[in-house]
Length: 344
Ligand SMILES: [Zn+2]
Image (cartoon, rainbow, N blue to C red; front, side, top):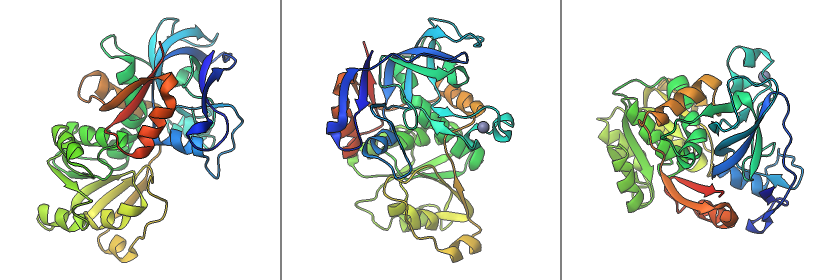
């Protein structure tokens, strides 16, 4: 089958369209004929290499994808050849205490399609049946693929970890990215008021359209936490949704009201960041980590997309053959929402 592989860790040159063996499925898996793939920041990290990631090459990346089931394993119930489906990239063992208590993303053997094992950047991909959700007829493969990882991630951050309530103020730091555009929409759909940080006028306008009531350009307003303090009547925000990490960390903590919560799911700018412990105990702040989701959160997040409450922001759609251009685009930071690849 045709696949976009990573030959070794490195720059754009290590990406190649080539022929690889079509995967064979086990009893509890399905084979998906992939139609749309959405890139995540993670795909760039996987290509460049991470200290803890040991891969066999060639590697097929991409965690977010949607397509049509073309084979079904013997033990799989309720899924059939021809079903239109989207995947949850988080793979768990399904046997340990955490998995059995419904906390799949806390599984000791948790890993991701596209990162630790082959993902969806190919004509076919094998996926455990437990990680599949059928797509309604009115939802395109591109919409489904562009939603999955960001929707399930943001849903766990906002609903489960931060327990957002209507009327609360949510600050979204990486406003223009996949997580950011999803977080602005989801917080808004859940009845929260939204403040977003971004870097260009075009992104500012789009974020307002998506429901942010205040958008701050952090390049023009370097002391943005003071602006937020003033805007909120010297109170601060209830929740910060962060995926940027180091460069915003100190100000993100400073933006919180007493009893506020910062939820982090990533650190695109670096893993450092200074924490003022005095601020944490005096203002009784919570710093919460969040990674991917449970099965239940995956379904609930995607139901918000399927019902039209949220529509993922798509920057561009390119054929799989242009995967280098897609990586380059995402790497440049000059994107608004998701970069999607399609296979005819
Ligand atoms: Zn487990």
